[in-house]
Length: 298
Image (cartoon, rainbow, N blue to C red; front, side):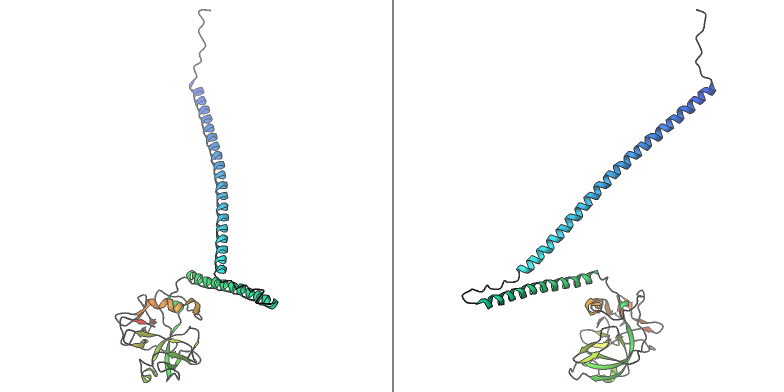
């Protein structure tokens, strides 16, 4: 027995290679399992966080709605409290008919409060509408060349002219202007002017005015803008970089013309401009003030 050698447990190269491949495969599977478990834990964690965020958002919405409701109620109470209460009649001085009359007065007062609050709400809505309305540009204006066919003094005003102007429509337009103190009528007769044609027609001291004559102004004088040579009645005035379509009729409540006026001016060369862009009749030239430079437009 002493001469028997112990068994040899040494692996041959082929068995060693197989063993290494098996261990490598087991290690890879273990890593994949670990990553999968981590991914599942992360997903559960995100679901919990999302649920919590949703609850927080719902709670904030509820608080915001309650705050807005309280503010509305407070504003209504303040408006009602601002109206003085009617005096209470005494039984000694007023018979039963007086009580009925007082009740009617109270109903009218309450109706007046509701109308006042409603009117304030409508005014607020109008202001908000102007704020929401994006700032208009000059493309909203329908500017056309017109020829003055006739000029006469307004019967009720020494400072106003009534002009009949051809703007390319089927019939001339009647236009009231403030040029009577600035330009003799013979200088306007048969001349070309620039008209704002999509204003709402309005009566000026009893005479309907269907357009607006655009004029250059400074501290000393006012004169109609002059179209380029070769322009014809009905030609459109356009502006580079402002290709939009003119509105059919300007809404007076939106005050588009008034909001554009600060950006309309006469430059140092006498050219009529909007934000530095010239009034132009395509293919015919620029619109100018005859004698005014560095002035305004009205």
